[in-house]
Image (tube, rainbow, N blue to C red; front, side):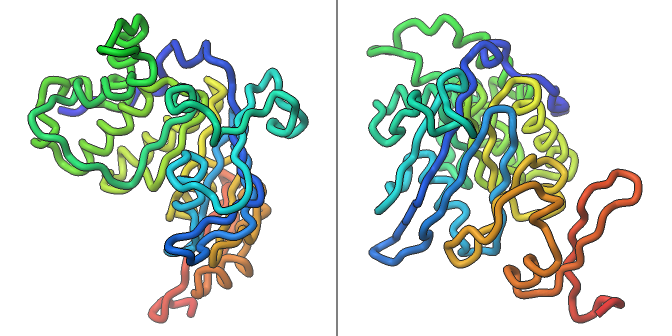
Length: 295
């Protein structure tokens, strides 16, 4: 029986400096074809920022550029500790060129849960989660004092502790997704990037993952950037949303201000009705199909 995701994160994380991550004037290409142009995004400590848009809009590419997995043709990616950042969290004298950092230095501050991973054979869940500690180990896998605690707690909060000794090649897609999330949390960073993290998860774990994102931000000051397809999930969990369309940022701001029927209908190419829930006050988005009674 899988555990319920626990609404807490490794205690070592809370002691780390809050970090802001920003991209400015980013142009990103594949094989000389521009897929993102002039994009700006800022991930602030203590906030969840959701990237939204239809398939092919550039949201995953933009997230990967913040993780240094897609080098920009133009623009900058900067990191700043909260104590040294300027107004808005990034442009002060303490900002660092993230693209120039040593890989291990960057990996101690930023982690990414990508859409897909190769499934390793012959290794256990605990082994895979331990991969998240690589930035803290020296040559020949030298001692990592915080490692055992971070690994154990990351498995606990993602509900995979009871499968720690199972081979990862025995797991379902949803179980694997939670294992890779545990690996990211074990990395113990001030910025967490998630690319469609609810893929393969059933409803319960989708909701608990969204809760965990909120806990990371609200309780531990982590800057969370997440690509989501579900507009209602974004409205429920995000402090800030960024809507991309055809490689450009069309709107950026609080969900209640950005998620309008006019914008979403244009961006997604289908009529989208936006309402406010009378009890919770949350923004609700619903696409209207040809057979919908309201059409």
